[in-house]
Structures are given as C-alpha cells and as structure tokens.
Length: 314
Ligand SMILES: Cc1cc2nc3c(=O)[nH]c(=O)nc-3n(C[C@H](O)[C@H](O)[C@H](O)COP(=O)(O)O)c2cc1C
Image 1 (cartoon, rainbow, N blue to C red):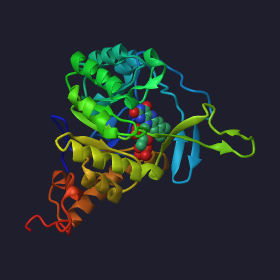
Image 2 (tube, helix red, strand yellow; image 1 turned 180 degrees about the vertical axis):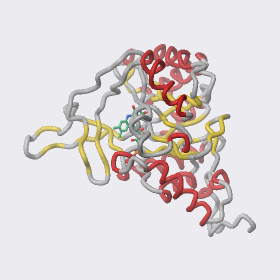
Image 3 (cartoon, protein in one colour; image 1 turned 90 degrees about the vertical axis):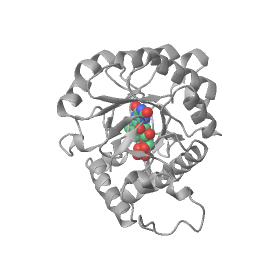
Image 4 (cartoon, protein in one colour; image 1 turned 135 degrees about the vertical axis):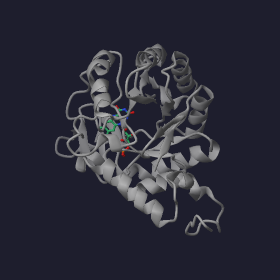
C-alpha cells in the first residue's frame, strides 16, 4: 500500500482532503494520523482570515455546498503551532497554500522550506486573482502556470502538487500548463461551484450565495477529470478526490490514473473514514489480484479485452 507523492514515498495512498481535516487535531481522537499517507491541511494564507459569514454549509442530495472562505490562522501561527503539532505526532503533512497574487504563493512556499513533517505542498489555485479582476487562477492556464512557476522557483524543498478546479472547459490544458511550469503532480478535483435556494426565505441558503459542491454527487465528474489528465499526462502523479466514501470508490480513482486519493466530505459523517477507506482499498486491491497498489494505477485505461479480473500471475 505504499504510494508516492512525487519523489516522496508515503505508507498509504489515502490522505485527508484540504479543508476537511483542519490541521489534523480534530481527527486525532478518531484515527491514527500516522497511518494515513499524509494529512492535507486547510489552505493557509499569508495572513489570518475569519472566512465568510454564516451560513456556510448546506446539505444537498448526495453532497454538500460550502463557502467557508479560507478561514485560517495565517502562515505564522500555522508554522508556530499546527505543523509542529503534526510533526510531534509523527504524522506527515501535505500543506495546502492559497493566495490572491502570484507573489503570495511564492512567499508561502519559501516560508515552508525545511519545515518539520512537511512531505509535499498542494497549491490551491482555485482562488480569485486580485490582480486580474478576480479571475480564478485555476480557470486560466497562463495564470495557473505563473503560480506554479513562482512556487517552484521559491523551492519549498518538497514535491509540489497543483490543485485544479473542475469548473473549466479543458482541465487537461490547465494540468499541462502546471506540469510544464514545474508541478510534480496534480490534485484533482476541488469543489464545483453550486447554488441552493431556500424556498421559505426565497433567498440563497449560503450567506455568500454560491458555494463549492463536494461529496458523492461530484464523484463521476472527479473521476472523469482524473481519467482525462492521466490519459494526457501518464507520467504525472495524480492525487484524486471527489466523493470518495469507501474502498471501492477509492479503487475507481486508482484505476482511472490516480496514484493516491484524498478523502474530504466523508469525514464529516465518519471521522474514521480515511483509515477505514485505506483498509477497504487494500481489500479491494487484493480481491482483484493486485499485489501492489501501484500496479493498479491507470489500469482501466487498458484496451478492451484486457480488462478482465487481474491476476498478477496471468
Ligand atoms: C468544508 C470544505 C472546505 C474545503 N476547504 C478547502 C481548502 O481550504 N482548500 C482546498 O484546496 N480545498 C478545499 N476543499 C475541497 C476539498 O479538499 C476537496 O477537493 C473536495 O471537497 C472534493 O472532495 P470530497 O468530495 O471528498 O470532499 C474544501 C471542501 C469542503 C467540503
């Protein structure tokens, strides 16, 4: 069940998803954080932010809409308290960073260099670019590329993953731009922009009006994105996510081309979900005759006729 995040080897292909496990403390009573591939921390910014007004969450059929607005302590407090806490527990951290300008991402990346417990950086580019009329970085290959190039140049000293938005016409062009600019891997996907209206108040449920849709409702979209990226960039490691609730869901992502998966919304209903899904994935892989998780990466892309039950001795 070992997996790789770029050049780094992790003991499990199952990680948490950014924003759904804070910096690990809340999940600690429910699972062994060291058994996870890594804890992917909530996107951190240069300064502390209180986030958007409430309500910030709404339940939807098979999913959830959120507009948290990147609430967080800022990089100073994060480096002083959150990351050392994870390192002291022996947990690995994939730190998600977010900014409103290219230079902010670069500064965050350089601040992380050498931090204890850091195994990778996930660059959340689903943020509005304040220098470009609020256009989301991840929706423009050139803007996405500028962020990844700046993070690479700042050199956090660990593998860098670009986290993509599904709200684009051609996700492959954005993935390619990020990889060409130095991303070691791709995280896919972030939430889809959605809206829920309360028919009593006749107003949007969320104070911010629109929000990000996550959970099982988005799984086929997420899988399609992973599939397309793997097909176009077969040598690029992908951290797949979107609606994973059990080992069979996780296996679908691996078969589509992910080399590891993140579990997000599922932890709100089952805080043990990442550890459970790791066990279930191991069982599902063994049940199909895979002796290593890495052997199953992208397996569903094999030509028809070679898609029967896999036997390693076949
Ligand atoms: C409450 C909430 C907060 C989130 N915050 C972040 C965040 O700070 N940074 C980020 O890159 N993604 C964030 N996400 C997106 C998740 O990391 C993930 O990409 C997405 O929810 C799809 O996975 P899931 O269906 O397993 O939740 C957030 C998702 C939720 C539900």
